[in-house]
Image 1 (cartoon, rainbow, N blue to C red):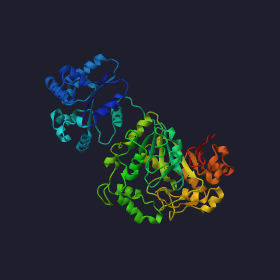
Image 2: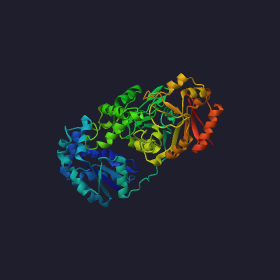
Image 3: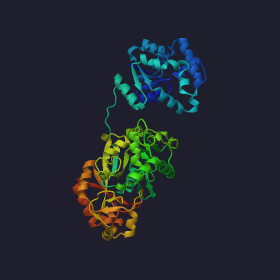
Image 4: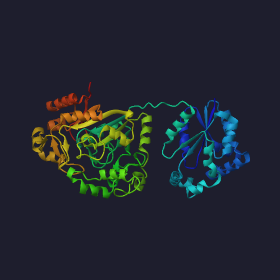
Length: 532
């Protein structure tokens, strides 16, 4: 049985995108009304001329010409099962299709709010605009009555906030066409800190980034991730941006953005709109956010980057300016226009074609606003679940949950909260053989610039973080703190006895394997360990 799908809807509602998704199904063919008009009216192949010729055909045939075009297409191609008409503009076109093809016709009408249609019209390329405003375009010719077609449609779908793929799948399934069941492949890996941040996630991410089609950063600029090659400290972008030039780069909707820092990183990394995607709903930090944190949160040794204040404004200022200045999202920033797009949809496209994705968390598990040691915590959920949520990815997509832990955990200097059994840098220098001046330089915050506090490894906290994150594997960093000679190791077997003993104990306590070991800040710093 042949099926005829006919769409309708106002200018800018998304008919072309919707129809393109329908066309992805096998044995679907779009009926070219353009070709029919050109052959019947001998007009110029130009937008305005085609519209005028189409209007004339409507008058002369009372809209029957669309059904003629469909009938010609059916006669010329018997292998097609679904013929797609994009789109009907007057009721008589739909009526004649039903008269001629009966129940085979499925009429879908797309709608959107006038405000959204006006916004989209403003974004159209100038050559596609016949009028200055949407209202002018909507009040001319057959466009005036297009919205009335909703009353004769089999199904009406709203396109304000739903993507074309979801709409097309929903429409076909509603009609009874077989639809692909939702069976998500587990192609997403998440890497998080298992302690109090500064676990060395950046260099680990850069080392494994070549395995992924896309790298996603969430969180905000209150955590810098250092990468050895090419040497750089990433605050907003994923740490593998420089080491993996073929990977797509993304900033998720749950992120908070320091515009000056992000623009600098974009410039430094020479990114363009083809490679970088920034979700329009990411929150922009302003000077007020930084000032309020620097004045009011020093008792917990905040880095003062304004992330928490900006996040609070995003929550509290949903309908007014209750807390500080009005909200400004990435989609409203002209400097980011080239990069702004729906990151969740972009991620789904990559996953559909089998591409793997790495989400890079910021800070550490024990700084979670909900599960950390309150009040000495950050302003977001830092676990694997939080990372997936901020990126807009379903938990069913998760493949690996990589938790990074340091051999000696650290916290920001000052009154940053409990860390366990603290030790002095002199003691760590004696144990590791690393010069104390080097240790002090290494253990200075990349964002706060404060001297860090260091402590003995906390075995109970390790187990707690593994359970909370659902970790599937562990990455250990700073293996050289068990002996500076470990920096020369290229395999697990070349690590000294202290480091190997530590790895084995971590595996026993965590209950999951240690697969990555970082032992130096260098191009070959991460040992990828094969476990049985």
